[in-house]
Amino acid sequence: SQLAEENSWALSVHEGESVTVNCSYKTSITALQWYRQKSGKGPAQLILIRSNEREKRNGRLRATLDTSSQSSSLSITATRCEDTAVYFCATDILGYKLTFGTGTSLLVDP
Amino acid sequence: NSKVIQTPRYLVKGQGQKAKMRCIPEKGHPVVFWYQQNKNNEFKFLINFQNQEVLQQIDMTEKRFSAECPSNSPCSLEIQSSEAGDSALYLCASSLSRVQDTQYFGPGTRLLVL
Image (cartoon, rainbow over the protein chains, first blue to last red):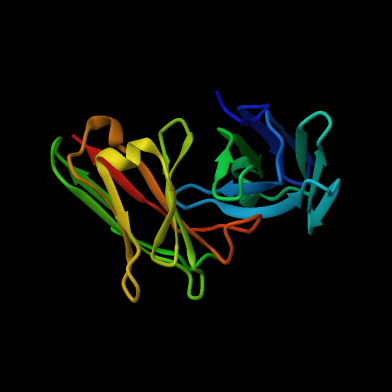
């Protein structure tokens, strides 16, 4: 079973709208990272949030972490067509590898 | 933007053939990771290195897979006898540190085993 998983398989929004991707994980973590993978490319990190942090921002992106419920969210405001991608959460458990969820596919329509 | 280079981008092999792919990590990154991403977007960690030394690898890697990161040469991942189930995107990532740090991924090598 997955140690990290996103809660939606796919989302679709119109350009300019906001969207939130949720993630749940099953073990204690040292950090959680959000990655985005566009078609034909490798994943690219968006935000790294450590276990002692509750919120982290990066431009239009905001990540939250709730260690008590073992969940995280990534919100994107003012979405753009170029935000279309698969979004993954990845947990850093032992410090030597990332454990990825299976991703949420986001489609931003013009 | 990641500067990890992976070659080739596409690789087609018959069952039982060797498949070899290469990775040049970002300059100055001592830690290198290999992951396998299947068609369902599931990632599987294969192996990682710090400089030339193996840090961790999974059992699968120990059997048919071999990898190395020699100094002053690209890192490589080789499958000795490819199987249909090895068809996947093989991703290389590099990092400054192996703990709580950003991993910078290359575009991957897509392997198809016929």
